[in-house]
Image (cartoon, chains in turn orange, blue):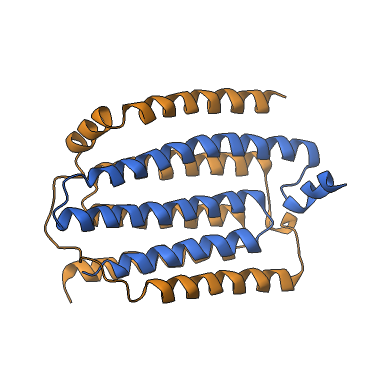
Length: 163
Length: 105
């Protein structure tokens, strides 16, 4: 077993354990902290897959911006564990069983798919020079459209928040 | 390393996200589970990008750019969604999604 597989197993275990912590913890603040752990583990996977630019963007945007936004909203609402609504137990079991059934179906469908393997060689494709060249030659229109999307999201958030 | 490992990891994360959406009633936790599902798909896209680069394709950078656009859309979605949740909390003093079923009548 190579060093890459060991790193993969450790990062995957952290990611899955943190993801389970997100949905199982009673306190929403603990959920957000577990989510941050999960995102850091996924960022580690990115750097193992030679996606250096996405690694940095993921750390800055997800763990730095989005999760802090969640934490701010939680602090503003001052939610405690006792306000957490109690609900019927059978709905919880139904949700867990349907999620597990989806897991089972997907794993069974993709178990025997034959695909080329991932080599351990390093590539240049995830560097910002490569991605920027592709972004500004082949994907200019989606890039500009995403700026319009951001503007409208900003205006929408302000309008909803001011009401 | 076979790409199946990454597929199984992504499936596990995605299904945990689905379970969270189905099991929890807190709107903020549901939002976070949606983020988790988006991240599972992102991880799979990056793994396939690396797989095709190793197989000799030169245009595999498109997958990583797709991940970038998914992140952009997720950021916009979170800002608007959290504004809606704050609005809802201001009106009902709760983030329980069961309260939102008043539109039914």
